[in-house]
Image 1 (cartoon, rainbow, N blue to C red):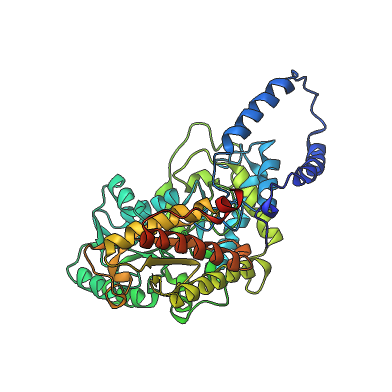
Image 2 (cartoon, rainbow, N blue to C red):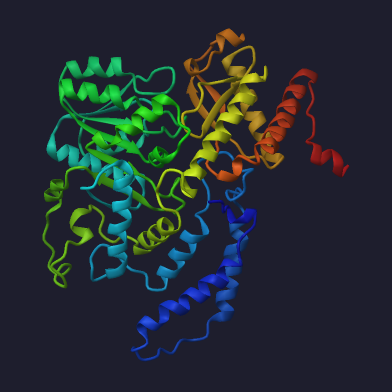
Amino acid sequence: MTDSAGFRFDAGSLVLLRKTLGRLAPGFTSLPALKKKDRSAGLTRALAAAARRMRDNYPYFHPLYAGQMLKPPHAVARLAYSLALFINPNNHALDGGRASSAMEKEAVAELARLIGWDRHLGHLTGGGTMANLEALWVAGRLAPGQAVVASEQAHYTHSRISGVLALPFEALPCDDRGRLDTRALEKRLSRGGVGTVVATIGTTATGSVDPLPSILELRRRFGFRLHADAAYGGYFGLAGNLGPEARAAYARLSEADSVVIDPHKHGLQPYGCGCVLFQDPSVGRLYKHDSPYTYFSSDELHLGEISLECSRAGASAVALWTTQRLFPLRPGGDFARGLEAGRKAALGLFERIRKDKRFVPAFSPELDIVVWAVRARTATESSALARRIFDDAARRNLHLALAELPVRFFELESAGVARDRDTVTCLRSVLMKPEHLPWLPRIWAILDQATSAVLGEKKNGGPKPPESVKKRK
C-alpha cells in the first residue's frame, strides 16, 4: 500500500486514466456528438501558470515530509476521482448522482463494519469538521440546551461547532498522556447538565486515544450521549501492533452513539472526504425536510435526506469506493499493514529520541505521532531551540512540525529543564506514510545533523551552515 507518488510525480498514471475513460465513454454512445472550441493553447498557458504557482509547496508526497498530517491521495483514489469528474456527479440527490450515490452507501457501509456496526445511518461529508457538526447537531436535538464536554486536547472544532449550535461547551483537563481525565469527567458529570461527551480517538496533536472503556462506565452511571471523534485515528482498529490501552478503546468503539472518520487522512483520499456515522438509524427523522424539486425522480432514500450539506462531490464517493475495492478494510491486509508500518516508524523514532540526551520525549506514541522537546536550561530556551532545529532541518529537506503543548507532557524538570512557563514549543512528527519506516534512518540522520548544528551554534556563538552548503563552497 505504498504510493506517495513514487517519490516523484506519477505522470504515468495518466495513461491508465485515458484507458479507463475509454471504458466509461461507451455508456453514453447514444447521445449526439458535441462540438467543442479548440482552447488547447490557452489551456496550456493556464495550466503552466498553475504548475509554477504550485511549486511553492512542501513536498507532502515524500517521506522526508514528516511534519503535519498531510500526504497526497493514493493513485487509485486520484484516478477514480478524476474519472468521476468527467461526469461531476452531485450526491445530494439521485438525480445528480445515481451510480456515485450507490457507491457512497456501499463505501460508508464498509466504514460502519470497520467500527462493528451492521446497522447504521451515515454518509460522506466535506471533512471532519462537517462530520462532527452533524454528530453534535443530532446530539443537541436529542438533548437540547445541555452541555457538550471534551478534553482540552480535543480538536478545537468542537468548541466552535458548539457555539454555532448554541450549545454550552466545556473543555475538561487531560491526563499527562494527553487523554481525557476521567476523574475530571466524573466530577463534572456529578453536577449534571451534560448531554454529550466527546471521546477523541487519536488527538491531532499527539495521537492520544481517550480511555473509552472508562468513559463508557461513566455513561452507564450518569447517562449521556457518547460521540467518538475518530477523524484522525478511526482506521487504526485494523492495526495489529497497538498498545493494550489503545486496543481496549478500539474494541469498544462500536458502543459509541456516533463516530466520525476522515478518509482523507489515513484512508488515502483527496480532500475533502469525511464521514459521519450513527449507530441508531432512527436519528434520520431529525433531518426530515421538504423540497419542491429534489426528490421526485425516485422513491429510494436520497443521501440529501440524511445530510446537513446539500451539494456534495460524488467524485469523493467514487474515489473511496474504488480505493476500498483495491485495499479492503480487513486486519492483516495491505491497508492494515500500511497503518502498522506508520506506527512502527513512530515507535522507532521515539526510541531514538528517548536514548538521545539532547531531547526530552513526551509519552510513548499510541498511534503514529511523536512529540519531543529539546533539553535546555528552561522551557523558554527549549522552545527557542526547537524552532531553530525545525528551520535547520527544513533547509536539509526534512520537514517536521512544531506544537505548543503542556510542559507536564514532558519530564522536563527531571531532565534539568526549569519550568518557567506552562507550555513548551516542541518538535512533532506525523509518520503516516508507510514509506516512513524504511526512511527512518535517513530522517534520524538529518534530525541529528540539524540538532548538532543548532546546539553547536548555541555553544560556539556562531551559525554553522548545513552540510549541503559546505559542499557547495
